[in-house]
Amino acid sequence: MTEQVYDVVVVGGGVAGAALLYSLATFTDLKRVALIEKYSQVATVNSKSTNNSQTIHCGDIETNYSLEKALKVRRSADMLVRYATQLPPAIRDRVIYRYPKMVVGVGSQESDLVRQRYENFKPHFQNMQLLEKAQIAELEPNVVQFNGQERPEELAAIAIQNEYTAVNYGALAQAMVEQAQEVSGKTVDLRLGNPVQSIEPVGENYRITTADATITARFVVVSAGGHSLLFAHRMGIGLEYSCLPIAGNFYYTPQVLNGKVYTVQNDKLPFAAIHGDPDVTMPGKTRFGPTALPLPLLERYNLQTFVDYLEVLRLDRSVSGVLWDLFKVRDIRNYIFKNFAFEIPVVNRRLFLKDAQKIVPSLRLSDLEFANEVGGIRPQLIDKTQGKLILGQAEIDPGGGIRFNVTPSPGATTCLGNAETDLLRIQQHLGCTVDRTWFNADRAAEIEV
Image 1 (cartoon, rainbow, N blue to C red):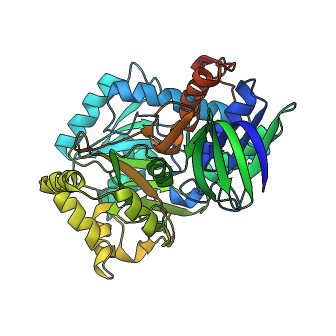
Image 2 (image 1 turned 180 degrees about the vertical axis):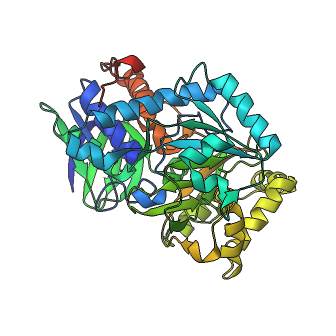
Protein backbone atom coordinates (compact mmCIF):
# COMPACT_ATOMS: atom_id res chain seq x y z
CA MET A 1 0.00 0.00 0.00
CA THR A 2 1.15 3.54 -0.76
CA GLU A 3 1.53 6.04 2.08
CA GLN A 4 1.03 9.80 1.90
CA VAL A 5 1.42 12.49 4.54
CA TYR A 6 -1.10 15.31 5.03
CA ASP A 7 -1.29 18.23 7.42
CA VAL A 8 -4.99 17.57 8.09
CA VAL A 9 -7.29 14.74 7.05
CA VAL A 10 -11.05 15.11 7.33
CA VAL A 11 -13.01 11.87 7.62
CA GLY A 12 -16.59 12.24 6.39
CA GLY A 13 -17.89 13.96 3.28
CA GLY A 14 -21.10 15.52 4.55
CA VAL A 15 -21.59 19.26 4.59
CA ALA A 16 -19.66 19.59 7.87
CA GLY A 17 -16.61 17.83 6.44
CA ALA A 18 -16.90 19.72 3.15
CA ALA A 19 -17.07 23.06 4.98
CA LEU A 20 -13.92 22.21 6.92
CA LEU A 21 -12.06 21.13 3.76
CA TYR A 22 -13.02 24.42 2.08
CA SER A 23 -11.93 26.40 5.13
CA LEU A 24 -8.61 24.59 5.41
CA ALA A 25 -7.84 25.25 1.75
CA THR A 26 -9.00 28.86 1.78
CA PHE A 27 -8.17 30.33 5.17
CA THR A 28 -4.99 28.55 6.35
CA ASP A 29 -1.40 28.28 5.16
CA LEU A 30 -1.48 24.48 5.34
CA LYS A 31 -0.30 22.91 2.09
CA ARG A 32 -1.63 19.34 2.14
CA VAL A 33 -5.17 18.42 3.18
CA ALA A 34 -7.51 15.60 2.26
CA LEU A 35 -11.09 14.47 2.72
CA ILE A 36 -11.95 10.77 2.92
CA GLU A 37 -15.52 9.63 2.23
CA LYS A 38 -16.64 6.01 2.13
CA TYR A 39 -19.33 6.58 -0.50
CA SER A 40 -18.71 7.36 -4.17
CA GLN A 41 -19.81 10.98 -3.79
CA VAL A 42 -20.08 13.56 -1.03
CA ALA A 43 -23.25 14.33 0.93
CA THR A 44 -25.01 11.00 0.50
CA VAL A 45 -26.16 10.48 4.10
CA ASN A 46 -27.67 13.19 6.35
CA SER A 47 -26.53 16.04 4.07
CA LYS A 48 -28.41 14.59 1.11
CA SER A 49 -31.12 17.09 0.14
CA THR A 50 -33.97 14.72 1.01
CA ASN A 51 -32.57 13.67 4.39
CA ASN A 52 -32.91 16.97 6.28
CA SER A 53 -35.30 19.90 6.60
CA GLN A 54 -33.32 22.01 4.08
CA THR A 55 -33.64 24.90 6.56
CA ILE A 56 -31.28 27.69 7.56
CA HIS A 57 -31.87 27.78 11.32
CA CYS A 58 -31.38 31.32 12.64
CA GLY A 59 -33.05 30.92 16.03
CA ASP A 60 -35.72 33.49 15.24
CA ILE A 61 -38.70 31.17 14.67
CA GLU A 62 -37.35 28.17 16.63
CA THR A 63 -39.14 28.72 19.92
CA ASN A 64 -36.93 26.30 21.83
CA TYR A 65 -33.97 28.66 21.31
CA SER A 66 -33.13 31.22 23.96
CA LEU A 67 -32.09 34.66 22.74
CA GLU A 68 -28.48 33.87 23.66
CA LYS A 69 -28.49 30.67 21.62
CA ALA A 70 -30.30 32.34 18.72
CA LEU A 71 -27.69 35.09 18.46
CA LYS A 72 -24.90 32.53 18.51
CA VAL A 73 -26.55 30.39 15.86
CA ARG A 74 -27.35 33.40 13.68
CA ARG A 75 -23.64 34.13 13.30
CA SER A 76 -23.13 30.70 11.70
CA ALA A 77 -26.27 31.10 9.60
CA ASP A 78 -24.93 34.42 8.32
CA MET A 79 -21.71 32.70 7.29
CA LEU A 80 -23.66 30.13 5.31
CA VAL A 81 -25.69 32.78 3.49
CA ARG A 82 -22.59 34.87 2.82
CA TYR A 83 -20.78 31.87 1.34
CA ALA A 84 -23.70 30.70 -0.79
CA THR A 85 -24.54 34.12 -2.20
CA GLN A 86 -20.94 34.56 -3.32
CA LEU A 87 -21.15 31.47 -5.53
CA PRO A 88 -21.53 31.92 -9.29
CA PRO A 89 -25.26 32.56 -9.95
CA ALA A 90 -25.83 29.28 -11.77
CA ILE A 91 -24.51 27.36 -8.74
CA ARG A 92 -25.95 29.73 -6.14
CA ASP A 93 -29.47 29.23 -7.45
CA ARG A 94 -29.16 25.47 -6.97
CA VAL A 95 -27.86 25.88 -3.43
CA ILE A 96 -29.81 28.59 -1.60
CA TYR A 97 -33.41 29.76 -1.80
CA ARG A 98 -35.65 32.58 -0.55
CA TYR A 99 -38.97 31.62 1.05
CA PRO A 100 -41.04 33.47 3.64
CA LYS A 101 -41.05 31.77 7.02
CA MET A 102 -43.05 32.04 10.22
CA VAL A 103 -43.75 30.37 13.54
CA VAL A 104 -47.46 30.33 14.29
CA GLY A 105 -49.01 30.10 17.71
CA VAL A 106 -52.36 28.29 17.78
CA GLY A 107 -54.64 29.14 20.69
CA SER A 108 -54.34 31.88 23.28
CA GLN A 109 -51.44 30.37 25.25
CA GLU A 110 -49.21 29.79 22.22
CA SER A 111 -50.20 33.13 20.70
CA ASP A 112 -49.18 34.97 23.87
CA LEU A 113 -45.86 33.11 23.85
CA VAL A 114 -45.26 34.21 20.24
CA ARG A 115 -46.06 37.84 21.07
CA GLN A 116 -43.72 37.80 24.06
CA ARG A 117 -40.96 36.24 21.96
CA TYR A 118 -41.39 38.96 19.37
CA GLU A 119 -40.90 41.69 21.99
CA ASN A 120 -37.71 40.02 23.28
CA PHE A 121 -36.21 39.20 19.88
CA LYS A 122 -37.26 42.13 17.70
CA PRO A 123 -34.39 44.44 18.81
CA HIS A 124 -31.92 41.81 17.56
CA PHE A 125 -33.78 40.50 14.49
CA GLN A 126 -34.78 43.57 12.53
CA ASN A 127 -36.73 41.73 9.82
CA MET A 128 -39.17 40.17 12.27
CA GLN A 129 -42.85 40.98 11.88
CA LEU A 130 -45.61 40.20 14.36
CA LEU A 131 -48.71 39.02 12.51
CA GLU A 132 -52.23 38.60 13.79
CA LYS A 133 -54.79 36.38 12.10
CA ALA A 134 -55.73 38.69 9.22
CA GLN A 135 -52.08 39.36 8.38
CA ILE A 136 -51.23 35.66 8.55
CA ALA A 137 -54.00 35.04 6.02
CA GLU A 138 -52.35 37.44 3.58
CA LEU A 139 -49.05 35.55 3.72
CA GLU A 140 -50.29 31.99 4.27
CA PRO A 141 -54.04 31.82 3.56
CA ASN A 142 -54.28 28.07 4.14
CA VAL A 143 -53.06 28.47 7.72
CA VAL A 144 -56.13 30.58 8.49
CA GLN A 145 -58.86 29.34 6.16
CA PHE A 146 -61.00 26.29 6.91
CA ASN A 147 -64.04 25.38 4.79
CA GLY A 148 -64.12 28.87 3.35
CA GLN A 149 -64.10 30.55 6.76
CA GLU A 150 -61.55 31.63 9.34
CA ARG A 151 -60.52 28.87 11.72
CA PRO A 152 -61.85 29.60 15.22
CA GLU A 153 -58.61 29.49 17.23
CA GLU A 154 -56.66 32.58 18.17
CA LEU A 155 -53.53 32.88 16.00
CA ALA A 156 -50.36 34.95 16.19
CA ALA A 157 -47.16 34.55 14.22
CA ILE A 158 -43.62 35.83 13.92
CA ALA A 159 -42.75 36.12 10.23
CA ILE A 160 -39.66 36.93 8.18
CA GLN A 161 -40.40 37.57 4.52
CA ASN A 162 -37.30 38.54 2.58
CA GLU A 163 -34.40 36.36 3.65
CA TYR A 164 -32.69 33.24 2.40
CA THR A 165 -34.27 30.43 4.40
CA ALA A 166 -33.63 27.15 2.54
CA VAL A 167 -30.55 25.27 1.35
CA ASN A 168 -29.86 22.19 -0.70
CA TYR A 169 -27.13 20.96 1.63
CA GLY A 170 -25.98 18.29 -0.78
CA ALA A 171 -25.36 20.87 -3.49
CA LEU A 172 -23.70 23.13 -0.91
CA ALA A 173 -21.28 20.38 0.12
CA GLN A 174 -20.39 19.68 -3.51
CA ALA A 175 -19.74 23.39 -4.17
CA MET A 176 -17.47 23.62 -1.14
CA VAL A 177 -15.41 20.61 -2.18
CA GLU A 178 -15.04 21.89 -5.73
CA GLN A 179 -13.93 25.34 -4.55
CA ALA A 180 -11.44 23.78 -2.12
CA GLN A 181 -9.85 21.83 -4.96
CA GLU A 182 -9.56 24.98 -7.08
CA VAL A 183 -7.26 26.72 -4.57
CA SER A 184 -3.87 27.08 -6.22
CA GLY A 185 -0.56 26.13 -4.66
CA LYS A 186 -2.01 23.44 -2.42
CA THR A 187 -2.71 19.74 -2.48
CA VAL A 188 -6.41 19.18 -1.73
CA ASP A 189 -7.20 15.52 -2.25
CA LEU A 190 -10.65 13.99 -2.35
CA ARG A 191 -10.71 10.26 -1.66
CA LEU A 192 -14.18 8.94 -2.49
CA GLY A 193 -15.40 5.37 -2.18
CA ASN A 194 -12.74 4.81 0.44
CA PRO A 195 -14.05 3.52 3.80
CA VAL A 196 -11.75 4.17 6.73
CA GLN A 197 -10.83 0.93 8.44
CA SER A 198 -8.86 2.29 11.36
CA ILE A 199 -7.29 5.41 12.88
CA GLU A 200 -4.34 4.95 15.20
CA PRO A 201 -1.75 7.26 16.76
CA VAL A 202 1.82 6.88 15.52
CA GLY A 203 4.17 9.14 17.44
CA GLU A 204 2.83 12.69 17.11
CA ASN A 205 0.82 11.80 13.99
CA TYR A 206 -2.07 9.50 13.05
CA ARG A 207 -2.16 6.61 10.63
CA ILE A 208 -5.42 6.22 8.72
CA THR A 209 -5.89 2.89 7.00
CA THR A 210 -8.33 2.48 4.13
CA ALA A 211 -8.88 -0.39 1.73
CA ASP A 212 -6.25 0.83 -0.73
CA ALA A 213 -3.95 3.19 1.14
CA THR A 214 -2.28 4.06 4.40
CA ILE A 215 -2.32 7.79 5.08
CA THR A 216 -0.45 9.77 7.69
CA ALA A 217 -1.98 12.96 9.10
CA ARG A 218 -0.64 15.53 11.52
CA PHE A 219 -4.22 16.29 12.56
CA VAL A 220 -7.48 14.36 12.05
CA VAL A 221 -11.05 15.64 12.23
CA VAL A 222 -13.75 12.97 12.08
CA SER A 223 -17.08 14.43 10.92
CA ALA A 224 -19.02 11.26 10.21
CA GLY A 225 -22.21 11.58 12.25
CA GLY A 226 -22.77 8.62 14.55
CA HIS A 227 -19.73 6.90 13.09
CA SER A 228 -17.58 9.62 14.65
CA LEU A 229 -18.46 8.12 18.02
CA LEU A 230 -17.69 4.64 16.68
CA PHE A 231 -14.18 5.71 15.59
CA ALA A 232 -13.64 7.42 18.94
CA HIS A 233 -14.69 4.34 20.90
CA ARG A 234 -12.39 2.12 18.87
CA MET A 235 -9.53 4.40 19.91
CA GLY A 236 -10.58 4.24 23.55
CA ILE A 237 -11.87 7.84 23.44
CA GLY A 238 -15.28 9.13 24.54
CA LEU A 239 -16.26 5.95 26.28
CA GLU A 240 -18.41 8.03 28.63
CA TYR A 241 -20.83 8.59 25.75
CA SER A 242 -23.54 6.39 24.30
CA CYS A 243 -25.87 7.20 21.43
CA LEU A 244 -29.60 7.54 20.84
CA PRO A 245 -30.24 7.83 17.07
CA ILE A 246 -33.46 9.69 16.24
CA ALA A 247 -34.96 9.17 12.79
CA GLY A 248 -37.36 11.59 11.13
CA ASN A 249 -40.10 10.79 8.62
CA PHE A 250 -42.00 13.22 6.39
CA TYR A 251 -45.17 13.44 4.32
CA TYR A 252 -45.79 15.28 1.07
CA THR A 253 -48.96 17.16 0.21
CA PRO A 254 -49.88 19.32 -2.76
CA GLN A 255 -48.47 22.83 -2.37
CA VAL A 256 -50.54 24.37 0.43
CA LEU A 257 -47.93 26.77 1.84
CA ASN A 258 -46.00 29.60 0.24
CA GLY A 259 -43.05 29.24 2.61
CA LYS A 260 -41.90 27.63 5.83
CA VAL A 261 -44.40 27.43 8.69
CA TYR A 262 -43.20 26.22 12.08
CA THR A 263 -45.22 25.54 15.21
CA VAL A 264 -44.45 26.32 18.84
CA GLN A 265 -42.06 23.86 20.44
CA ASN A 266 -43.18 21.90 23.49
CA ASP A 267 -40.36 22.74 25.89
CA LYS A 268 -40.74 19.34 27.56
CA LEU A 269 -39.84 17.54 24.35
CA PRO A 270 -36.25 17.28 23.10
CA PHE A 271 -37.48 16.85 19.53
CA ALA A 272 -38.50 19.28 16.79
CA ALA A 273 -42.10 20.39 16.51
CA ILE A 274 -43.91 19.69 13.26
CA HIS A 275 -43.40 22.17 10.43
CA GLY A 276 -44.35 22.56 6.79
CA ASP A 277 -41.76 23.47 4.18
CA PRO A 278 -41.32 23.83 0.44
CA ASP A 279 -39.06 21.05 -0.81
CA VAL A 280 -36.31 22.54 -2.96
CA THR A 281 -36.09 19.29 -4.94
CA MET A 282 -39.87 18.79 -5.37
CA PRO A 283 -41.53 21.92 -6.81
CA GLY A 284 -45.29 22.03 -6.36
CA LYS A 285 -45.30 20.08 -3.10
CA THR A 286 -45.23 20.92 0.60
CA ARG A 287 -43.36 18.63 2.99
CA PHE A 288 -44.66 18.14 6.54
CA GLY A 289 -42.78 16.60 9.45
CA PRO A 290 -40.77 15.33 11.04
CA THR A 291 -41.95 12.49 13.15
CA ALA A 292 -39.26 11.41 15.60
CA LEU A 293 -38.52 7.76 16.29
CA PRO A 294 -35.57 6.09 18.01
CA LEU A 295 -34.00 3.80 15.42
CA PRO A 296 -31.07 1.44 16.10
CA LEU A 297 -29.03 2.49 13.07
CA LEU A 298 -26.19 4.96 12.56
CA GLU A 299 -27.34 5.63 8.99
CA ARG A 300 -30.90 5.69 7.74
CA TYR A 301 -31.74 3.01 5.17
CA ASN A 302 -28.44 1.20 5.83
CA LEU A 303 -29.21 -1.91 7.85
CA GLN A 304 -25.52 -2.80 8.01
CA THR A 305 -25.07 0.05 10.51
CA PHE A 306 -27.18 -1.81 13.09
CA VAL A 307 -24.05 -3.67 14.18
CA ASP A 308 -22.19 -0.36 14.41
CA TYR A 309 -24.97 1.03 16.60
CA LEU A 310 -24.76 -1.90 19.00
CA GLU A 311 -21.04 -1.15 19.33
CA VAL A 312 -21.54 2.52 20.24
CA LEU A 313 -24.60 1.92 22.42
CA ARG A 314 -22.50 0.43 25.24
CA LEU A 315 -25.70 -0.35 27.09
CA ASP A 316 -25.30 -0.32 30.87
CA ARG A 317 -27.17 0.96 33.93
CA SER A 318 -26.25 4.58 33.18
CA VAL A 319 -27.65 4.44 29.64
CA SER A 320 -30.74 2.57 30.82
CA GLY A 321 -31.23 5.19 33.54
CA VAL A 322 -31.16 8.06 31.07
CA LEU A 323 -33.65 6.34 28.79
CA TRP A 324 -35.91 5.51 31.72
CA ASP A 325 -35.78 9.11 32.98
CA LEU A 326 -36.87 10.30 29.54
CA PHE A 327 -39.66 7.73 29.46
CA LYS A 328 -40.93 8.83 32.89
CA VAL A 329 -41.78 12.31 31.58
CA ARG A 330 -45.41 12.12 30.52
CA ASP A 331 -45.10 14.39 27.48
CA ILE A 332 -42.06 12.48 26.22
CA ARG A 333 -43.63 9.09 26.90
CA ASN A 334 -46.81 10.00 25.04
CA TYR A 335 -44.77 11.47 22.21
CA ILE A 336 -42.74 8.26 21.89
CA PHE A 337 -45.90 6.10 21.81
CA LYS A 338 -47.44 8.42 19.25
CA ASN A 339 -44.40 8.24 17.00
CA PHE A 340 -44.37 4.46 17.21
CA ALA A 341 -48.00 4.61 16.11
CA PHE A 342 -46.87 6.69 13.13
CA GLU A 343 -45.17 3.51 11.91
CA ILE A 344 -48.37 1.43 11.92
CA PRO A 345 -49.97 1.12 8.47
CA VAL A 346 -53.43 2.69 8.08
CA VAL A 347 -53.24 4.34 11.52
CA ASN A 348 -50.13 6.38 10.70
CA ARG A 349 -51.60 8.71 8.08
CA ARG A 350 -54.69 9.45 10.16
CA LEU A 351 -52.59 10.31 13.20
CA PHE A 352 -50.21 12.48 11.23
CA LEU A 353 -53.09 14.27 9.52
CA LYS A 354 -54.26 15.57 12.89
CA ASP A 355 -50.82 17.07 13.57
CA ALA A 356 -50.51 18.57 10.10
CA GLN A 357 -53.97 20.14 10.44
CA LYS A 358 -52.58 22.33 13.21
CA ILE A 359 -50.78 24.16 10.40
CA VAL A 360 -53.25 23.70 7.53
CA PRO A 361 -56.68 22.81 8.96
CA SER A 362 -58.22 22.07 5.56
CA LEU A 363 -55.85 19.16 4.80
CA ARG A 364 -57.56 15.86 4.02
CA LEU A 365 -56.34 12.31 4.32
CA SER A 366 -56.16 12.02 0.55
CA ASP A 367 -53.70 14.93 0.49
CA LEU A 368 -51.05 13.02 2.46
CA GLU A 369 -48.42 10.98 0.69
CA PHE A 370 -45.73 9.27 2.76
CA ALA A 371 -42.31 10.51 1.65
CA ASN A 372 -40.46 7.29 0.91
CA GLU A 373 -36.74 7.30 1.71
CA VAL A 374 -36.91 10.89 2.92
CA GLY A 375 -35.45 11.81 6.30
CA GLY A 376 -32.18 11.14 8.06
CA ILE A 377 -30.90 10.25 11.51
CA ARG A 378 -29.71 12.58 14.23
CA PRO A 379 -27.28 10.78 16.57
CA GLN A 380 -28.00 12.32 19.98
CA LEU A 381 -25.31 11.59 22.53
CA ILE A 382 -26.03 10.26 25.99
CA ASP A 383 -23.60 11.49 28.65
CA LYS A 384 -23.26 8.52 30.98
CA THR A 385 -21.25 10.51 33.53
CA GLN A 386 -23.89 13.21 33.95
CA GLY A 387 -26.76 10.84 33.26
CA LYS A 388 -28.49 12.95 30.60
CA LEU A 389 -29.25 13.24 26.92
CA ILE A 390 -27.15 15.92 25.22
CA LEU A 391 -29.31 18.20 23.09
CA GLY A 392 -27.68 20.17 20.32
CA GLN A 393 -24.04 20.10 19.39
CA ALA A 394 -21.87 17.21 20.49
CA GLU A 395 -18.14 16.91 19.94
CA ILE A 396 -15.34 14.93 21.52
CA ASP A 397 -12.00 16.67 21.73
CA PRO A 398 -9.35 14.75 23.67
CA GLY A 399 -6.57 16.99 22.33
CA GLY A 400 -3.42 15.60 20.81
CA GLY A 401 -4.35 16.34 17.21
CA ILE A 402 -7.72 14.63 16.78
CA ARG A 403 -11.36 15.74 17.05
CA PHE A 404 -14.66 13.94 16.63
CA ASN A 405 -17.74 15.92 15.53
CA VAL A 406 -20.85 13.85 16.15
CA THR A 407 -23.91 16.10 15.98
CA PRO A 408 -23.77 19.64 14.66
CA SER A 409 -26.25 22.09 16.13
CA PRO A 410 -28.57 23.07 14.71
CA GLY A 411 -28.02 20.69 11.89
CA ALA A 412 -26.08 21.69 8.83
CA THR A 413 -26.67 25.42 9.37
CA THR A 414 -23.58 25.63 11.55
CA CYS A 415 -21.22 23.86 9.14
CA LEU A 416 -18.99 26.92 8.65
CA GLY A 417 -19.22 27.98 12.29
CA ASN A 418 -18.13 24.50 13.33
CA ALA A 419 -15.35 24.62 10.72
CA GLU A 420 -14.06 27.81 12.32
CA THR A 421 -13.92 26.07 15.70
CA ASP A 422 -12.06 23.17 14.11
CA LEU A 423 -9.58 25.58 12.51
CA LEU A 424 -8.77 27.16 15.86
CA ARG A 425 -8.08 23.74 17.42
CA ILE A 426 -5.90 22.84 14.44
CA GLN A 427 -4.05 26.14 14.77
CA GLN A 428 -3.38 25.50 18.46
CA HIS A 429 -1.92 22.08 17.70
CA LEU A 430 -0.03 22.70 14.45
CA GLY A 431 0.86 26.36 14.85
CA CYS A 432 -0.46 27.19 11.39
CA THR A 433 -1.82 30.56 10.31
CA VAL A 434 -5.59 31.01 10.18
CA ASP A 435 -7.12 34.08 8.53
CA ARG A 436 -10.42 34.69 10.36
CA THR A 437 -11.31 37.89 8.50
CA TRP A 438 -14.03 36.23 6.46
CA PHE A 439 -15.57 34.50 9.47
CA ASN A 440 -15.78 37.78 11.36
CA ALA A 441 -17.31 39.81 8.54
CA ASP A 442 -20.10 42.05 9.77
CA ARG A 443 -23.69 41.43 8.64
CA ALA A 444 -23.63 44.81 6.97
CA ALA A 445 -20.81 43.61 4.74
CA GLU A 446 -22.88 40.83 3.20
CA ILE A 447 -22.98 41.08 -0.56
CA GLU A 448 -26.25 42.33 -2.00
CA VAL A 449 -27.76 39.91 -4.43
